Amino acid sequence: MCLTVWIVRKEKQNMVKTDRQKAMADCDRKWANSVKERVGWKCEYCGKNKEQTVLHSHHIFSRRHLGTRWELNNGICLCTEHHLYLAHRDTATFMLWLQRNKGTTFIETLEIKAHGITKYSTSELKLIAKNWDEFNKTKENVADIIYRDHISDGKEVAA
Image 1 (cartoon, rainbow, N blue to C red):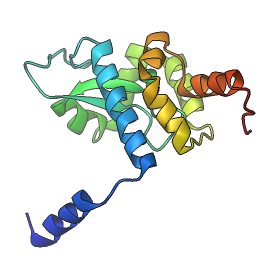
Image 2: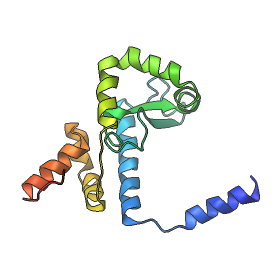
Image 3: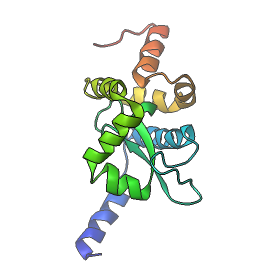
């Protein structure tokens, strides 16, 4: 590894995370584990389990889309090989496989949610992390939990 890359990595490690970044990282970790648990800790493409390979939780639609970032349906459990070489390098083959296995309606519905405008405050992100088990159990969308909690607290939800 060259010195420049090492220095950049060290600087990034030493950066202090904001409350917002910590809450997002907490949600990301919980989402990744939930995706793997949902399918029994095995690659959905080849069937290898966690004893045979390292497993990754892959976002079907990128993490940058907050509308689906923590939606379990937006996640698929893949082994390292299929995550790096299929999902990220041969995306056309991956999407074709996904369409055959999940269906066109599934992908279109997820795409609509992914491309919706979604913004979360730091307090909302903490609420997502705190209520993760409820969210996972009911399969509700994160936005639905936040909306319900705002209504039950008597707060008005900003449009």
